[in-house]
Image (tube, rainbow, N blue to C red; front, side):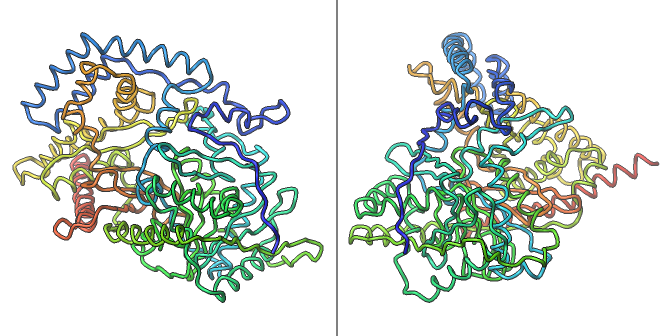
Length: 625
């Protein structure tokens, strides 16, 4: 066994400015970050117009009595404390903008992520379910794993050198912010009391990955000293050795389960691991490029794979790693991603690169290079005191309780997809949002606050903004669809198109920095006096941002599914993909035998999509008469 070594790191507290120096090397800006100085700063939305949008968004969710009370609170805020708070926020925004960041970023990273105290598994992390490989060489577990690792380390090489081209969006090919890439690889969230941190390690000094199999962790060097990945067959040889050692040794206490705990318990148990003499072992995992999980399970159906990727068994994971590539015994695979310092789109880029590279015909002329020095995998051992063993037992029990409390259901709808919806003259994303509204109302008989994020990386250090899906337009259409034949079909179609158009408008406004929730969040961070906080303590305000339906749209041709957990106990996490001829949704919720929300919601979305297609086709026929 080779000795493990202590490694240097940079510790981030959520302020992107702290890691600004990583954007250049020897005074020269790296290509990945070449447009950072030119990307516009996140604007501050207008106070009065934001409050008006807020009232419009609240109206469908509350009764007349609460609405009148809220209108008075908003008016008082606008006439008294609001302008003073807004001026203070404006000054702070100017200061933060001039110092090279967003007025929102540090607050958002800290409050929404690093100070979040619940387990990151289910509550924060999300998963991608990769489509099966079409090539036999990549269909068994080790073959699939080695091809994914080879492609991931090829991406890692370009990432480490900063030579990835910056992303661009829109017809104008405008560059978007690249700051999130710093926290993707060779990094790890670290639990602490009160607020976690993220440690970043030099990729030049950490060319290894961590492989976990049967709950045992291994350091595996998979590239040469120049960052070039070993050949697939060479990586396969190393992974076979890991599997052999892991499966033939004694069963060991599952240290990885500790990372599934609430953050306070994980902070204490990690401190205990350090006191037990395991700091170097922890650093081996935390500094690795990413985690590769070689699972013994063989999930088949989408629901089974979703569960296995959303949480797994807790023992074969390290939930604080930003990237975990997971490969099952039957060759199915996916990725689990920690969310604290970056959102899904940069990770999607990495996943897309990996899958495009591995979905090409494999090369058959590869042989192991005899001159290549393949250092053998190093098993990462842990010295565990009785105190650490008690923490492991406690974490295992808490994890079992957490996953047993959850239901997961996937709908793969093959009736039609984005191509047909575009022919109907509507936005596929907004169309899907209306289907969710109709299905949820039919399930519950009420309208609840619904969240859809939009990407804000067109602004420096931007992350997301919020679209409040429930509107008077969506409510009017849903009511028309649920009152029987009294509303003419042509009118139902008109109302659907109006609701879709309004949703597109809200999304466009949010993408420009003019959503409701980010400005209100900023003002709430500055509110100190009781009178300043009245608007934020108003039950209508709290209800309007209690996201019973938390949605997000992400589509990739090489994905079969993706998802995450609910954000409030009574809610659902609803991830969806809009493919040309299909739609996939994944619903996660706390288990309730009476409500059975995931199963029922998926069924009702299926019905809603069928009904909406008939509605649109009727309109198409009428227009041709």
